[in-house]
Length: 481
Image (cartoon, rainbow, N blue to C red; front, side):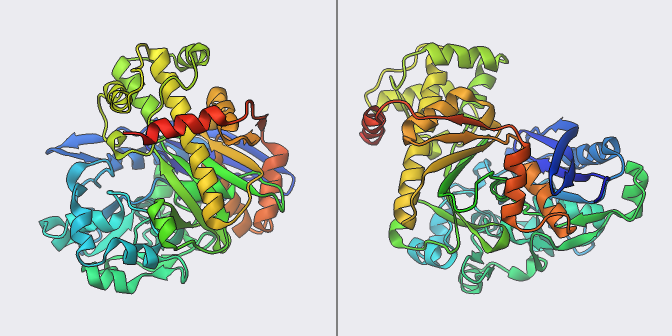
């Protein structure tokens, strides 16, 4: 068995990290080599990712990691870089929270109505989907000069290896993939004027993505060859691959962090009109699976409040929120009102006022409002996914950073009326290295990888409290204008 670790480059909306992992059929040990901030930059009136800072951070992380067996990259979805004919990047990639896609969807729908778009791609409406971003850029000099589109993990992989490709799980978030064929939705692209030739060929988790280039080896101090493995490069796809579910378990998952992604792992997409109206998305996962889920604003709400308050003591905030009255006020945690940055406490207060509920008066009350609202949104997503997919749910797995938030986990168990198993917190990095280890022949199938996570990573179980009536009543308050 290999003793040299695998390296997972895991990029989130607020930070990046390079994690190394020792993997055998019975051993899974993670070590954080390097963590670095991911700070968006507003320039020229638009919000961008500082992609060169992220690239420098991952190079620093590989240098600190030491010799590795292979490398994989995962990140958030939908955003991308444009390359010119020489393969050079045409400007910093736009951030999905940038306002340039406001009201673009209506222009796309004039060519492909929403119901037809959903039937073809199974993707929820979100104003930042790649299809809308490309439509927003249609008349720009930048897009006219572009010869290739690379999603963020594929762009970074290209800089490491010189090889270009489009990883499928991330591509499935563009609204340009047919989840049934697992190939491009050619009719949608043609009707919306989207040139699919801009995207390099599709590749799948486990496929080789090239070797680190000589100058990358020099900069990181690694000895080649070091292969880069295509992983499930959408971080949610990697996180779901690391859900420690038992074989045959009827489980829902909630991947928590800046976003909460709540749903089910299915064998086939759900493309009904009822599913579209409920705004569920069908994204692709490892081994031919479908991630049937709903996007919820997640801990972004609390992160933005902390930024507004200048509050760094999260533990103190959560302790105070735990003592505050529960379900006093709740908001719709999926409302696009909360998508842009800035003035989050005021927007939460305004949403409570608009639904006739008491406005939070203190930081503790605002924090409790956020966590109650997230738990309520988790409940509604899990229950509705189970109904629309006709799939029972017996347990909810919470993975990602929110698994460390004991109050959120307990409130989610209470709201769902189901046991919650929390952990692992570094699910995306784990899923990343598990795909690498499977491609390397160290692990077998997805079930074996999940058994390894369950047997080696710290997990906490939360049993539900109460009868759920108060949560149902709170949901009715949110729905009442």
